[in-house]
Length: 125
Image (cartoon, rainbow, N blue to C red; front, side, top):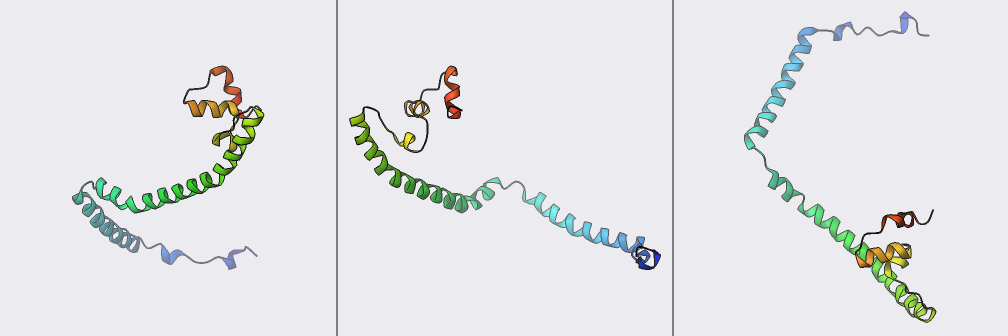
């Protein structure tokens, strides 16, 4: 099946003059575009301005998603606080989100965890 009869003759494509013409045509088009870019100079502020709308749209989506989570979790936290107040333990938004109590305390107080308690960051595993 793979004998010489099945091979294609591609020798017609091996024309050095045609290859040189193609390379020169591509180079001429690329040089024109690259020269125009160099003459414009750096336009960092214009590039950043073009990203303004997508970034604001993404930030809006993140804010909406965060608001939905807070609105859904806040009643649960309030209910747990009233139940926890009678049981003697405090429940917070971080704990309702599944963060361990020791880590939640570090986050809420803004203090870094002691090195000895680094094991708590892995969830006690």
